[in-house]
Structures are given as C-alpha cells and as structure tokens.
Image 1: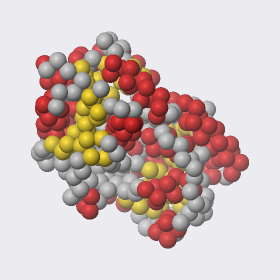
Image 2: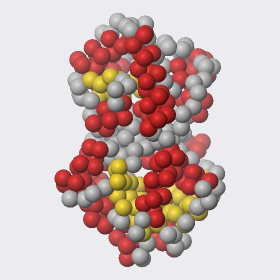
Image 3: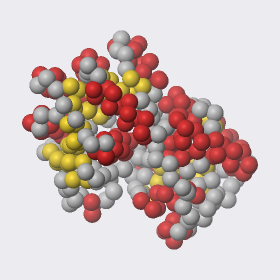
Image 4: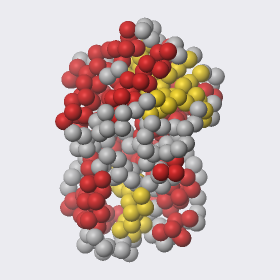
Length: 372
C-alpha cells in the first residue's frame, strides 16, 4: 500500500505528540512492507538551530518530502498543509492520512482526486490558548471538515469520541496512542548538566504552553517543604510570552530547574530517575509524555481531565483541574510516601505494557486504510 502522511512539522522530531505518532506509525508501516511518504514543512526546529539545516529525504525507510511553508504566524500550518496535500496527490497514494485539525481542512482536495482520506484528531487544537482569532477559526474549520468529509476519523480519547458524536453526529474510531517500553537507565548526563541524582526530583516534560498548566505547578511548588527539585523539561512553542511568565513565577528558586528541550539519552535519564512525574494540563489530546513516564515505571500525578484520567486508570493520582491547592496537597502526600509512589509506578508500567502497544495501533490503523 502507498501511504501519504501529513500534519507534522519535520522528521525525525519529538517536538509534539503529532511528530512522535507520525514517526512511530510511518516507520512501523515501512517495516511491514508498505511504501510511506511523510510531507514535512520547512521552519525552525524546536530542538535547536543546529537542526534547521537538516533536510532529510529518507529516514528508516520512510520517504521525506519537504514542502514550501509561509513562515508567518498563523500561516505556516495552513500553507504547508496546502502544499503537502498537492505534493501527496501528485504522488498518487492509495490513502492520505491527515494528522491534526489544521491539515484536515485540505481533505476536500483528496476527495476531489478520489483518494481515500483518513484523519486523526490529536486533540481539540482550536481550544489552545496560544492561537489568535484567525488560527482558532481555521482549526475549528478543519475539525468541521474532518467530521463531514474524512472517510475514516480517528480520535485518541473517549472524551473526544463523545464530542464528535454529540457535536457533529459523527462516529469515530477510538485508537489511543502507543508507547515503546524501555528499561530505565542510570544517572549520567543529568548529574553533570543539572546536578540531579536518582529520585531527587519531580519531572514535568512537554511544550511550555498555557494549556499544560505549568503555572499551576510552579505556584503549587512554592511553599512545599521538600528537598526535591522541580525539573521542567521542554521548550516554548509559539508562546514565548508564557515561557517568560512561568520562569518569572519560579523567580530565583534554586529548586526549580528549566532544561529547555531535551531528547535522546538526557530525556531517557530524566524519565528513568524521577521520583514523580506531574502533568497539570488543562487541555490534552492524549499525552504521550504521560505514557512514557508510565512506561519507565514512574508514579504519575495528573489533572483530572478525562484525557489524562483515561490513560492513568487506577495506576496513578489525579487532582482537580486548575486547582493549585489540590495540586499542592497531592504533591505533599506523594512526596512523603516512597512506598506509595513505588506501588503506583509498578502498576503504571504494567498498564502500558498490556494496553498501549504500538503494534496494536498500527494494526487497527491499517484496517481503516483498507476498509471500504
């Protein structure tokens, strides 16, 4: 089968959930004998300027085509999606897989060309605080197009599935993200880079954007009597003002460390050796960072939004969304109980091993590609 994938920024990249999902799906489909082309947009790589010049044409058997992009706020996603769809149609694929709401606005082009379209809604992106009026309207338009025009529509949570059923009368396929389960690695690089030891810190990992609720976490951390360090691993994404805001909230607190974007061995060490993983989000699609923390056997504390609670099940702790007081109390309780954290971490790892494998995700996605 000849498959085109649209919607991510570049490959390889860990900038966000879309990028991780596209990489996992595309490389695994190639390993199964399918021909996959991923259409990337030009632009700044969150991993750093040194990566900007890299423009691969192939990655682990996946063909990569970089398309023109208008680098203006609100136009980058629109322009790259348009040019990516045109490029994909020229390559005559059997199916185009659109990832995220914005690119779904281009589904009518695929329909006109008679090419099967599958869409994955990674989250209700139009609700994110970082977008202006134009971008929000465009993303909502993409959502409506996906509901009306996609041959198959994939969602990552039961909450989003209910949303499409109630809002558009559209039935969807619930296929949650997967995770690769790796063995924990010992502290090496993070000791010299950040002065961290095993079990000496609480970790947040993700984009520094308002909907992640990092301001709640820093406010809850203030006044907490602990010898642990709060590590915030991630970079800004169209939200530099918010990044500056949360750094301002932390002030000169030596027990709050900002690492910026991390990957590779450093990221593995951070997940492996955290005493607690915290995700205080007000809005999520399906958080891959949470799956990763669980896969390393970390005790996890999240807000009680359905997208987080669904993933955790009974293997972690939730607190009332947006409540600094509830978050503070949960942090205090968990940090005081080593045994409880260990029990939750063991259960979390078992849950992702049993319920969130990439092989199942690929198999179910292929069924939708082939369905008539």
